[in-house]
Image (cartoon, rainbow, N blue to C red):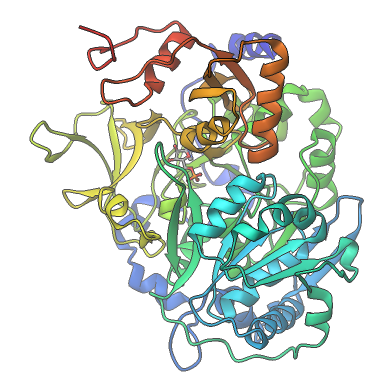
Amino acid sequence: MARLRSRVSDVMTLRPDIIAKGPRDWRAPPNLADFDNARATFTWDAARRELAGLPGGGLNIAYEAVDRHLNTAARDHIALRWIGRRGQRRLISYAELAAHSNRFANVLRALGVDKGERLFLLCGRIPELYIAALGALKNGSVVSPLFSAFGPEPIQTRLAIGEGKVLVTTEALYRRKVAPIRDRLPRLQHVLLVGEDGKTTAVPGTLDLVTLMANAADACEIEPTGAEDAALLHFTSGTTGTPKGALHVHGAAITHWATGRYALDLHADDIYWCTADPGWVTGTSYGIVAPLMHGVTSIIDEAEFDAEHWYQLLQEQDVSVWYTAPTAIRMLMKGGPEAARRYRFPRLRFIASVGEPLNPEAVWWGKDVLGLPIHDNWWQTETGGIVIANTPALPIKPGSMGKPLPGMDAAIVRRREDGAIEEITAPDTEGELALKPGWPSMFRGYLNQEERYRKCFAGGWYLTGDLAKRDADGYYWFVGRADDVIKSAGHLIGPFEVESALMEHPAVAEAGVIGKPDAMVGEVVKAFVSLNSGYTESEALRMELLGHARKRLGAAVAPKEIAFLPVLPRTRSGKIMRRLLKARELGLPEGDTSMLEGSS
Ligand code: AMP
């Protein structure tokens, strides 16, 4: 990587700081060709009218995504092209997806699962996940996806906070991750199991989904949900306390439609591949809802990242629009341009990225190696959909997140000493990124945490928790997080959750967790621990703690590094000073330490 970086940065010095674009660069006329005009004329009411709405009124995400295509030519179009881990293939048309999801809705009805009750998904990228999500939405249930690489602890916490009544999972995941915590989940009434390769299962305390689906009718009346009815529950991490369950409503579909059109430039004949896992918000909003709403064919790849496999998929599946993430792009870059050049991507016409800062080198790499620049965009769990984006219409400034989309108003703000929020209008000045509330996919609350939700709003703005700048041309540039939350391989990790798991080990007296910058995955989770008396630091204990955390939290969340300290720096009120741990780790100035315990 070091060699690659120096080679790339040699070239970088010769790069212009803008990639101009115009009709010659478009491989299809874009949906958004005149950015300023679209921003001036766009209204959410007009976007709402582009959706069908439920017969008899109301709005339901699954109806917009699937059933409304049934009276159109898209009916027999392939909605999902699934590629299994071992190369198995399954094609599902819009008509089949409608019937399967109806069956699933009927399964829930037969089990007595009512509107508003919560269903959790813990599956890898398998067709049943998509069918269950859509079927549950048709039933009016609230869908909460979990990342399948979570360990038992994060799964238990989220299911408990979300009061999950139903869980859909695979036999393997159930045995490894859910069975050990099942007795801590009294609200969980039904576990629906998907067997390996669609085989039936017979695991005590669970129901076999294959059998239930086989016995269900494939027609169903969709629950008459309204735009403000809860639809999705996405967990996100904060600096302190338990994870936050961000609630989204069926009306979010309006944003999914508009952003799929403007930010991802989806056309009905696209072959689209969103590489995000549906356990996270990107994999739901843009891996399930938005592409289906636009009637495209989505590639669902069950396997984990592998550079050769990804190039192969892009080529063989004729992907035309690709939505991926910086860590994946950096891993492809690491393999060198020769790996990519063994493949051809004649249909590929638009590439977008989200989740973490996209280095200018990566934007240029796309242009040089794949023939297309990569369009960074920004959003977060709470916004439910893309907010700031590089679109086909505008020149790209590599390193920038782009501009607020039509319908979205952003600002850079600072909190004055009297607590008031002040907009910063001077260009290139750092402040907190704020958004004017009112777009349809905005979260409607943190489940059971009204105060935490309220604190996100001030002075008529939603405060994102990100630090950013806006330049004189109106492009936004990410600076960093305003809090201690860690972004590793695009996944948001709450240090508190990691610290709590470490503290459960008898050797650990205190734990402080930081994100340590990493060239490949953005940040890696690093923990500092002090030990209880009777324990001494050793390599064996470090390995034991790493293993303990991994077992509880899962590989995606557990620390990669653990260091021992005699004591951890704390504020006078007893809070561990993660900021100081990080500054010391990176050899940076320690800043204001007047709050440090023991300081005079
Ligand atoms: P999540 O809620 O897990 O989707 O994470 C959202 C957070 O990821 C944002 O608040 C940012 O800190 C970060 N993020 C998302 N997209 C970008 C981007 N394009 N550039 C920099 N950071 C990003």
